[in-house]
Image 1 (cartoon, rainbow, N blue to C red):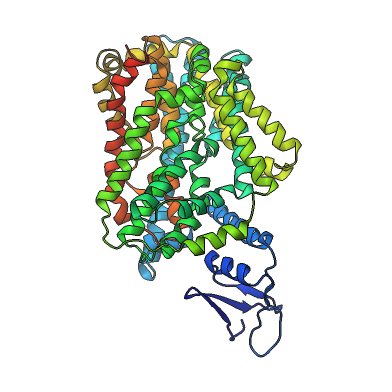
Image 2: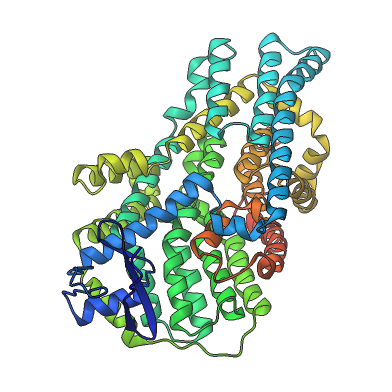
Amino acid sequence: KSPYLNSIYANEKTEYYELDSNGVAKLLHYDPTILNRVIKEQNNIYKCLSNSSSLIKKISSRDDYQAVQKERLKQSEEIILNTGIDSEYRQKIMPNGTKTSIIRIFNYISFQLKENMGWFLCMILPLISYYIAKTNHFTWDQTIFLCVLSSAIVMWMFKLVGDFIVSIYILIACLTLKIAPVKIVLGGFISGSFFLAMSVFGLGAVLLNSGLIYRLSLMILYYFPPTLFWQNLALSIVGTIITPIMPSANGRLVLVSPTVMDMTEIMGFKKLSNAGVRLSMSTLNGFGLMSNFFLTGKSINFVILGLLPMELQTRFTFLFWLIAAAVACLVSFWGRFFLAAFLYKTESPPIISKRQIKAQLQILGKLNFSEWIAVIACSIFLIGAMTSFLHKIKTAWVGVLILFIVLFVGELEKDDFKQKIDWPFLLFLGGLIGFVRTFTYLELDKWMGQQLFFLTNYMTSDIFMFIIVLSGIIMIIRFVLPANATVAVLCAILMPVANLNGINPWVIGFCVLVISGGWFFPYQSTFYITFYNSTKGKLFTDQQTALFNMYGNIINVLSLILSIPYWRMIGLLK
């Protein structure tokens, strides 16, 4: 490494370079605010280190700027996909020195014990299930399926393998043992939910590649009033608007994290200040926690849609899902917004430089071709989904049409199609829908309803108590089971039971979805950890957000309880 460092000052901030072994400059610290100013003030910049005249870096166009942004995003995505928790977060939860070695040994032993326990239960529970099935005089197909189901739930609970691998295991067992007809077992892969999920992932990739969200974030800062209330509200609103067109909370939060970090600096907030935490929680509220209220908000929502009877799948379009979830959405949005304002009070007003933000917008210039394609594709998709009752084309096929167009014009390339679409989840989705259809085909839903008579009684006679009891059950389950697995398992059991008892299964599935989305500890929420990682722990700590998370669970339950009269009014409940 060269001992000579050169710095460039802009707005009292510094960015450093060093020479690698080949004499090429390496950017040590990157600040988009500095880079924007440099590009604006001098289009071609040459910087030299030491006593030499080596060319360090040339920034000549907005393409270079966008390349840096994409590189940052790529690095963030690698953190999410490869590790889930980066080294900085690990250092926070595992201190250095001798204690680290002890903790690592303890964690290793705990992991091994957990994994061994999981595989042990995978062998024992099918035997217990076989005994239960024989005691209840099940048919051979019902018995084998119950054994497969018990081992699959253990794999999901202990995360012994990927969720999609468990789905493949269920499919193989059902097909090779001829438990149910092929059209039942593989029905999930020809369902509208499968193709809708695939098309939304493709649309999200186009939106991600275009850089449209970054431009939108800058426009928030520029056009909204420069007060703490309005800037927090703006982030929450924009996150909510983006949610239905990008069905990945992780992706949305990674994308907006650099903007939030820049906002805290531009506003003059100190590291880990209440104002910064409030801004972060407002971002989490809009970009992460509104997913349940839009059909296309997150991938697991398609599981709920796929588990509905065919006549209800036709009814629950994008627009009707939003209408049905409207009260819960409003309670959740405003509840968390004012909760953040109450918990993280601050007296210092924000300092926002409109000139600086305007300079960044000028660098971006007018909408380019990719951004226009993203705008048009999203608009057609949303309009087509909302007006499906007029043109009689299912939302899934509108989505596939949009996917075809962006592929045809080359805006979504072959590599993007392979990498940006969550194919493992699609396998999980298709397999799970087939699993539930097999469950119903074998009439195990009737038997399960008899075993869960206490929940069934509440479900049919007192929906208020049902939500309270269900909340307690789910919160306990969530300590050991991930959110998606919790939704998949409980909905697969409860939604057919609800349909059997004349209860709208969407209401039950939606309740499970909303309650499962809450968390007490960071490990229970992947997108919370993603947001922490992508902001590098500079905006908030787990201790600062503990109360926000805890009260958020109460808001989830309250949003469902307040929705009961509304659901009765629109005919979803009797």
